[in-house]
Image (tube, protein in one colour):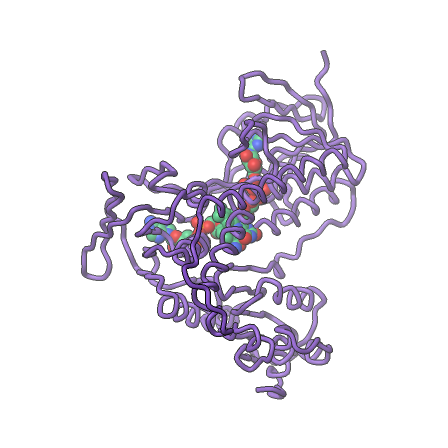
Length: 480
Ligand code: FAD
Ligand code: NAI
């Protein structure tokens, strides 16, 4: 019997993959998406949405919200005259709420596949060969059964997995990566985290707010190296002094020993040797691209020196009609970046002018206050010898922020000294994740700071701080 044939076969059903599949189908291509992972589906059925929906962005934000409310009830209600004695957290309910959100969204993607006529092929996808200008993709199901389908185009979107360290056995019960850390059944009294990156800060914040004594061990001597120095300086103060996260920098982990009562982490810092004893440990030291088992060697698919699929600016691999998007290729490991690439590739296959502007991808860290930025940091501009002007306005000067009781942080806008073009915007504060969208739109349209300064912003809103920062670039802030 002849193999089933599709115009486009996408391998991987995470944000990069499912969006590529939906867009390809919208453009009229017969499209299939291969996914093998059930994640924690109670019926063992394949789940779409990848890391992001199942064990990443969405569940972490659900837990962040629950823990924020608990923290507010304990610490912020009082300033409004509300007493809330004896506030309790039922971790089981919090985790079930998170699981329900995940189920709702992942089954929603299955609905979108039906609506757009994308065929879901349940199994692990790998390259089997090429014949008559068609790629053969083998789909191996969990029960061992397999079929081969033919594809004119293949989009690889196999994502990434947590990086584990030698000698630190992750069991996702006591020593956890993101999967276990999103499913604790109780609040650990003492929580250790290896890696003060995005996951370490977000999940460290969740369990700290719920009452854990959290210690984060970070290898690098600097905190949040990729962010603007003004943000990292303020964030360090807020997280360590105000919120009580213990963050140790410049740490070298020597041994991790699991005992009856938790985990002992032996490490060096400065001239000293230390042991940290905790009930649970999260290992969040970055992620590695998923290329194993993909059959890359069968067809000569080029993998770069860092284990990622090698692609050009348009996500084309070294093979004809084979594309790759998302965490499995270069660039930041962010869901929205993968989704944009998925759309771009589908449109390029259709002969359209698909395009991703890598210079305007926003970054967000969902701590409280949130941190968000787009474009260049001041350090990067200095290193590149570009002259710039800065406008920085604190939320403390904003009526809405005061009303909300959320006055920590600032908006910092950096514009070219010669052209006034916005080069970077850095926000630390409540709702930074939403506020940054204005800066992204401005930069995408090539705005100058003066453009933002001349836009009418609703009053009273936090967005007025963005407005004031734009005015401040020209030293004419009105409220500060
Ligand atoms: P993935 O989401 O990893 O999906 C890849 C899919 O391919 C998986 O479902 C996998 O099972 C499947 N697959 C792999 N190999 C095969 C194969 N051979 N055959 C079939 N299927 C295969 N990003 C943000 O932008 N914002 C956030 O707030 C955010 N929070 C995060 C929080 C955590 C705790 C973590 C871990 C990540 C977070 N991320 C966040 C990152 C985000 O989840 C990833 O960037 C995003 O999921 C990458 O999408 P992707 O489609 O490339 O890969
Ligand atoms: P990360 O790259 O953000 O941080 C890892 C940290 O671990 C780094 O600071 C690194 O220096 C440190 N580290 C590495 N090896 C170490 C060692 N041996 N000992 C001590 N520290 C060590 O990676 P993280 O937090 O695991 O997250 C993975 C990815 O997931 C992120 O890069 C990001 O792309 C994505 N993500 C995005 C989120 C968002 O957009 N809000 C939230 C969570 C994850």
